[in-house]
Image (cartoon, rainbow, N blue to C red; front, side):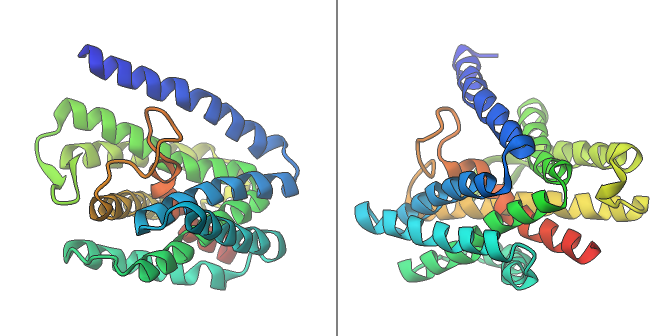
Length: 269
């Protein structure tokens, strides 16, 4: 491994370690109002970055972040199980492959900002709704994104030759995606046999289909944010997280996965 690669990996680990520890501590020990507030703060920062990609600067970007976070925090506190919150986001993600394949430009800025509300608000509400079902469940769903991202990174570096979406994200390869799919398949099998009964993985075909669907959505979320960054002419959504970029760079896959997962488990209840 080259020295620059080792240094970048070290920076990523140093940044990620306290974030993971803080997330786990809040997930299992924070009372619900504090959890809503902490995740709402993350949403505010993500919305601020989203506004920056749309071309808003300064006060305008801050106001968009505050307004979006206020809406999502209110819904999270009052009606986290309201399915109507998640359905528009799920419809968008089902249409996203067609948008990506046709290279649709998310302009003008008003459209970009409206799409931000549609995507980011259900992400926050979904995080609260899934934790209300079970903290273990939310951790399992987040684990899909973490495992897929890590497996894609290492398998892509080791075996990657064929570009997955060269016009959108030149660094991603089919070999990385296949490695991530294999890792998620193993993850689903382990959870089917060992997850708590509260997770309700009732049969193996259901478990595999569910986790493959979440994996596919995680790829879509990543690619869509990459498209927005390319259209904005930037490499990262921000610089708040050394080695990782911005908040959106870390939650891009979750924006697609969390609304769908929340809908599934709300309906299952």
